[in-house]
Length: 368
Image (cartoon, rainbow, N blue to C red):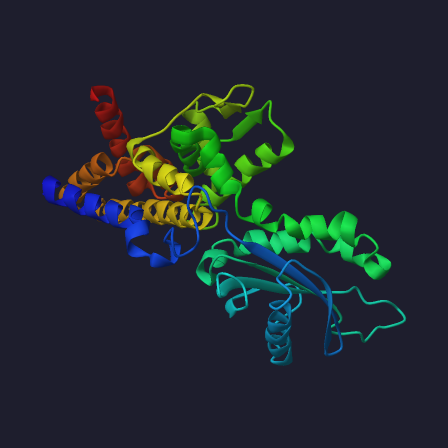
């Protein structure tokens, strides 16, 4: 039984990690990625008044901008662009890629007392690059980045176009998409420590680094965490973490590569290292994000499996045996039990089983 279950876990893990072979949307050549070629990315901003679009600025080729304007006009006429909500689609334009992913968002202007009914007036921001599927992986980051432009658009006649707006829009790809790539490139094989910290609610402190690096690491940890995706009480999880005397992970950037202190990982996180390094070497941030999402999905699947085994173990010794086998085979037992402690804290029967599993895992770690 143990051999069969371990084999199934290995197969499931391999399916999760083999993004490159299964999904051609992230293929290196198709998306224009390799170690020497940078993805072409573009931006365009329009003034939207009533039903008319007026070009404010664009990095698109001259022949491509009217095509984009026609596309945006159609979307607006159908009511497909709602204020403050980004929309992503594939758009065919006269650019080398022919079809590119296009994120567009309508930022409505604040109503003035003189124009209380000025609905629909504002600016349409378009960010283009990669594929539709690739940009969808960064929808939240793109939403936040575009919202960061709101205050700059309140200036009369946009006199700050060259000093603020254009530089800001020109950096959308670097700031909204490339942060995961920068973190993996920075820590290399130590990425497993960050993955484990994200799953374990461990705070990560970055020292001797600029603000951008600190922000990159914070965003990576947030993207890799399961907060909001699993049912858990983070306060309880933090208390359990404290009882285990886990300390903050420290990344000291005064050296190159950075020096990491208080590092903790496990076999589950270690197994993902090579996938992250391969995608980073190919300069493919979309593939990196998909690997990160698959990492989280596999962790959630394992958490759900353990919960099922725990419920069964309340009335079956054989199910308890399967719990032990599962924890031994998955390589992520410490994280799974931390989550189980938090989720089952008010269920005495489950708590008793988890204590047994804790003892089993401790014995296995002592032997290993």
